Length: 483
Image (cartoon, rainbow, N blue to C red; front, side, top):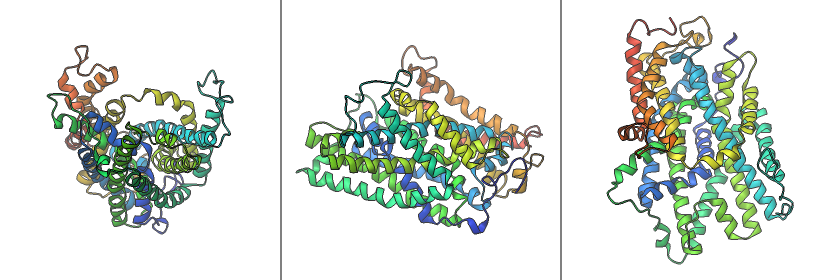
């Protein structure tokens, strides 16, 4: 496949090179799901007033819900062997596809930097446990960066590790995920065993339970938390074709995702709850942060081994969730000049420029501003792509035209852009209230009704986008891409 809209990385994967089995896809999800945010996921739900089992069931339900668009969006990748930005050309147009591709890439770049900082912090902890870094050597803070030279060097070392792997290509990422998955599962099981062995009363492990404010119903807490849980993987539900394009069959991509996503997310959230229950019994307080927990254990061997496990978990999550998509998205901007490796290097560079250690101090509104915020945008994009692929085109695409700047998908799809705007608008007032921190107060910019809508952002945006896109495709002025 040649032309200005194609290169070796964006072109369809030939059938003989589609070698990923259901285990590779399951391993991919295990590698992405086993991470600190997943471990701590139930903490926010319990703090909001849920019991431990309500939090676990919310995690399971949220992942079963997001699994549906995940498998559906993956269908086009497997059938045509194309990545997410190319598949988006069918619904948004060859030019309009830059909107969903860059929207996804921007989120991924932010997460890439944050996860790389977390991995660098793990290296820093390892060196500190071994006595190679001491408070005396780290007294000076770099004025512009706001961190010490040791912290920056550890961050940079972990950054370099990512660069080495991505420069080796997509197969190297497949290799990392396949070998990391069984190790990460073993780490989760080991944590569970430790919790049950360390405490005398195993019933205390299940004591985690938040206290709801009087008059606040369970459902008032449940739906925003469920929306946030769906938003956790709203990004991957868009760019999953970046991986399913390498699958041998639709059965492999669907079964692999079913095996890897809901089970791992639920299990590792459960591990976080049980281990935190053990910390209450052992240390008299709930320690949700696994890094802080390891520090309390004291043993140098335990600290080093735990931080190595954290490094592997962070690396496997970051490579798959936050490198592949922006790499393809940036490549789609200028296919003749930017390939997968070039796009990955742009992602890595942005990951440094944003100074993620500063972002980490501003994530107190993680659920309502970050997760729900981008689910309000990415949900409608998913809705448009699903409607176009399954309802409008009945899964039949002109694969050659996806790469033709003058073909049937050329330009910008007015139907997609209008549908995107219409589906985002209902959530915009609630988003503004959340960003300004005025939601639920007299100073709020918009009525509390919009805060309630915003709590269901993904569930509102996705079906609205599907309905509007189908409607606009029936109109003669918006029925063709840019024509």
